[in-house]
Length: 159
Image 1 (cartoon, rainbow, N blue to C red):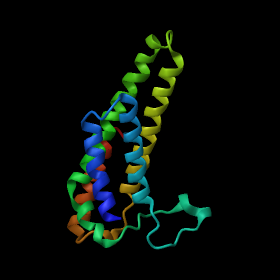
Image 2: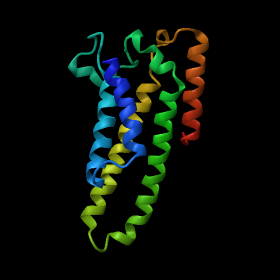
Image 3: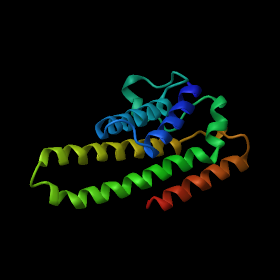
């Protein structure tokens, strides 16, 4: 699963920073990449979560083999950078919608809803990234560096 997460991290970067097919195909690919990222981070590696309490897990229980992926500052930086870009595009899209609603209101509404869904996916990913267990890090200094980067990212994102 680590290979999948690392591949998805690379794919997310590529999909969001380059054009892929038509606009609709690109949007679908972005959504799917984020959904797969969230599923990797939410996977119950320990088999502790039953179906009824799936949303109640408080820490991300990824294996220690994933440590380098989380101690790499590029992982958090990628998701915070993309979140900030999406947040800006969501605000611009909502503000600009008034001028487009007169021609094809349903197309614009669907587009706004797709961006809002992606925003929610990013929020869920950020929650997962902020919920790593303490033992995931190789040292207290690595944990402090991750926590500092996470909170600085949250601050820059406007939280």
